[in-house]
Image (cartoon, rainbow, N blue to C red):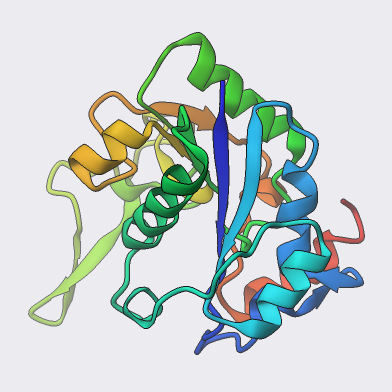
Length: 228
């Protein structure tokens, strides 16, 4: 099994400037992800896709491969993860041959463990599936959500569960952003990391599921890294 690990790390971040190389627990944020994936036998390369020379330097020093700076067309707010992934995948396979899977790991999920990554890879291998996606239980059940209509609160879901005990509601999962593993054929075919037969990699730990996108989430991460 040959899997390319891809870490997308754009330099621009409006809500949390410079977050990908901001120090968390004494080391750049991106290094948490690089460290977690190093030494896994199935990983043929740890490739970082970035448009930032500063991130490129930090990632290279941490042991990742950063052979180029991401083209401008893939560095805008409109560029999707799929666009970035396909650009990196096409380049790598042209240079180094075909891979069996593309593992996308966002640097904003610093507490995902190597154990969890290996579990996801084992799922991908053992079930011969097309995609494995990291998911976690939701904090607020959608059956208890509302919307505004004509100035009043109304249930967001018509057949809502308001009044039903939480333990009696069907469990609901959300994509946590920490793990995407997919076959190159499937990614190129559907231009999506999700498909009708995606296998869930369940992450119950709120710490591992943390996705840093705001100053508030960064503050939470600083507290959590003391316990990691």
